[in-house]
Length: 335
Ligand code: TRP
Image (cartoon, rainbow, N blue to C red; front, side, top):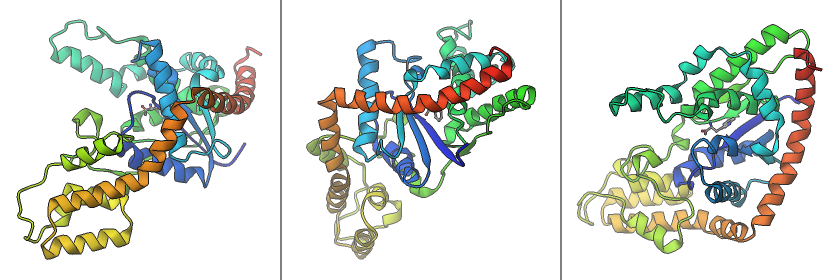
């Protein structure tokens, strides 16, 4: 077995924003230069929420195109599509037979959906909840274990899923470990300031707070979105505190150190208005994302190319999945 396998799933729901770029895409791309990496589009996870074929197809391509445009190299990383690795779903069945239902009852996402029903005064707390949501943690465990993933870079919100995966691997290993054991994976959760981008209101950028800026906005719309970031009415000539300014915080993630320190000095000295700061911010974001936006648009105009990348990556991923399943089938006694 390879030493370390970094594996993560990309939920292709909705478009990506600047916070995803700083918090997930950039760190995963830098891990991809150092480790053995498996990154996949979690399309069957997305089916739980997207029930429109054209929309799902678009989301899969757009998710893959976003990562490829940002620099994910399919020669280095195995880039694949979950649904094209059917061994995942066979493993889901096997793991389901070992997983206590009570564990699923305690899953945060499931409990949150029931709480929402409760708050809405709906007496059947399971109303509107599908089995896909309920079984999600087992499918996610299968995603990871089928590739023998050892390190799983995810956001803090996914930490329970990683604990569940470790638990489920443990149930299997306890029963069948004499014949085959899964490596027990660890979450790689980066909570450092470098990976948390503020949204336009200063809270963490998130679609659920509606404080986000989409990743590939056309240049003129990006400029407008940056201009609309709220700032106070300190006059241009007054000194300003960079550290309490959202546009300045954003600038630190997109501009180089020299530019950041130059702008800091200008703000502290007075004479630099918020409008000037926002121009600097727009230029920095656009310099970083402009070429990526162009690549994204080229890829989206040629969906056959994206599909071919996913098909080729999925074949490579399947080789590993098949090898795992062969051992798992023998261990449980169906082969
Ligand atoms: N649940 C993850 C999310 O919502 C996506 C995901 C699916 C995943 N399968 C995975 C992440 C396996 C890491 C490993 O973001």
